[in-house]
Length: 324
Image (cartoon, rainbow, N blue to C red; front, top):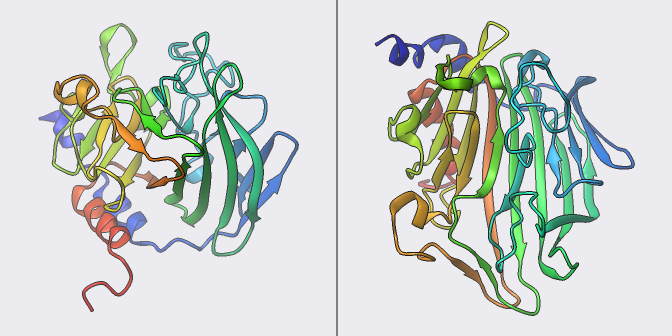
């Protein structure tokens, strides 16, 4: 009962954070040679790293109060962090099988997502925008596909920060097959203190909750509209929630969410998650075609509150003017 009770703590704090509209903090977006720095009211929020890396990623990812909510390894060596899965780079999007190429790990022969150019960099009182074009290349340098991605950053309040992500994958002169594997896709690796299970199997103080009410390990490989990961960082509870948009392919997505802090939405892992025949979850983008995925990532003070998260999801998922 104690572990379940922890899911409902600080209800008032999180409900207040969710009820605050984004746009209360000025967002600045500053390009550098290898990254773009995003600040809220002059304070660091994150850096979008696009050069000298196997794929673009956001690190550090600082929640309300400037608290780091993702793991530092492999970008930095912080005492107490495990050094498993060096391809888990804070906040990123990729996939483990794209026309047979592994873009998820950094094993020999892995693919690379290479920054091509910026399409928009914008600062403003209502939010900041990074929009870029990228090329997905094999180890030999052949282009498999390309993408255009938009990241929108919002402050909101002292108890809330938000990132909206839109990724459009584009097939060129040949079809692109997004293969059936659990290794993907829109992902975070959370602060080690938030883990449900700590190293050597020791119980952690973190919790997982999905929109269907599944808790902790029961949420892995299940389909849900949203998923939330809560836990303490330096004695204060935070929640990282991710929403899967109803217009996304195969909504509601499967969640590749682990008790050690990996947290990913993966619409392609049907074989691993449900025991379907191999390649049952393959998704093909035809020659010259494209496919778009949209996600919202919330960084919140407090524990997971299903009613508040559900209401927030409904507001985000319902088109303006629908039902009127």
